[in-house]
Amino acid sequence: MESPIGQETPIRTPDSKPSLIRGLSLVDSVLLLAGGIIGSSIFLTAKDIAGPLPHPALFFMVWGIGALISMCAAFAFAELGSMFPDSGGQYIYLREAFGDLIAFLYGWMLFAVANGGTIAALSVASAAYLGEIFPVISKEHVVLSVVGMTLTRVHVLALISIVIVTWINVVGLRRGAALQNVATWAKFVAMGAFVILGFAIGKGSWGNFTRHGGDPAAGITMGMTTGQLVSALGIGLIAVFWAYDGWVYITWVAGEVKDPKRNVPRAMILGIIVVAIVYIAMNMAYVYAMPLTEVAKHETIAAAAAAAMFSPRAANWLSAVIALSCFGAMASCTLSGARVYYAMARDGVFFQRMAEVHPKWRTPALSLIGQAVWACLLTLSGRYDQLYTYVIYGMVLSYTLTVIGLFVLRWKRPDVARPYRCTGYPWLPGIYVLLGTWWTINTIVERPKEALAGTVIVLLGVPGYLYWKRQSRKERSN
Image (cartoon, rainbow, N blue to C red; front, side, top):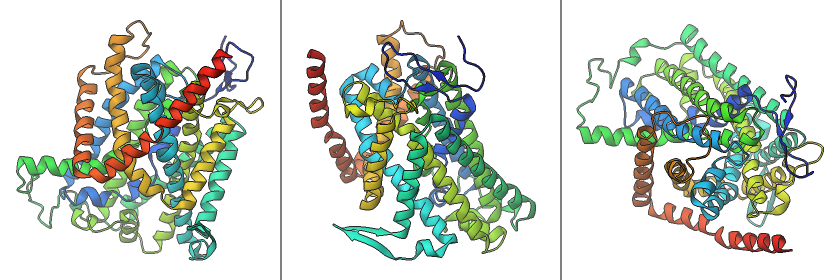
């Protein structure tokens, strides 16, 4: 029987233990995905794309290609999400396709580096940009220094934000969803104002959309050979891929989405479309503000564009937008990430207490708290960016393996109901597998030290896996 409109639907379990609640609507899900993807990258990455691709047509094309490639993977994930609409998402898909160990190593990578590092980095970035508005925050005043860890006012504010966001998520799914919804809508309004006001009253030029190197008649290939053009597109796509990263968040929290077999696939597809529109609109504003040759010179392109279109005083307003954007992305990661460790613990391959659901608030409270404690430690260590760099190739590899898992499960589990079947199968997921494999191999060849360090971090989880599996067998035998 359906629940009354607006009420949360409890997930039925065979025992009397408290369970999670299906309280996320389609709108919540789209906002969670979009809010998680749009962090700080859209304010920073234009330089990395305009450098190798200094023609407006190529510049905008690479953003569109990035969205299409992400969509190829999302179509595959959407089918898997309709097959296994439970908390843990990608962890569950990997488990069903390749077994416990591969799935555990993915979850371990998320906990140890990827999610913890993302929460740490976004909270520090949010605090740092607030420091641009309120100098008292950004003053290099060391609050505490212990065992090589330096605690500044920015770090204190970052830690406070992690604790507050985690607590809001602990005391109820709807409270956590409301927080990320408000942050995401506010982010959309602020970015929309930047774009609309930029074109309406900003000091820019439409001629920048046809200009390359000061020559409006320059050819689109700018004298590049086909090989050089492909190489330049590949370089630009690296930055674009990271800008679109985060669309898997909704799969992690699928166990709390209403009508997940329909809404999880819809949220992934709609979310990527929304993000692509926002990204292209923001980049159009940047190009309106200055030619691509100038865009390629600015690390903080959003601040430079705001100063060019409005005035240098607009930097404070833009700092507030970036701080809000980072905070919203951190809130989305906090809400969704804890559900992966909850699923791992439920399978007996992680800390067992993380499988518990709070009897009153119906959230994976201890999983959320454990995630926050580790993120705080990474924040204090200051090593989160370096660690995340090490596992970047592992994240792309995990996406590629999951899409391969779609092919495996079509053969291995043909009987499982698939309310949504992958659009363009087998060609679109096949294209993603080829691109993901090429990118992973290229990273290993070009950056062997980082790839080796990332592999070591992932493999450090193997002893833990063996320990938790042994403990799980003992409990079952007793």
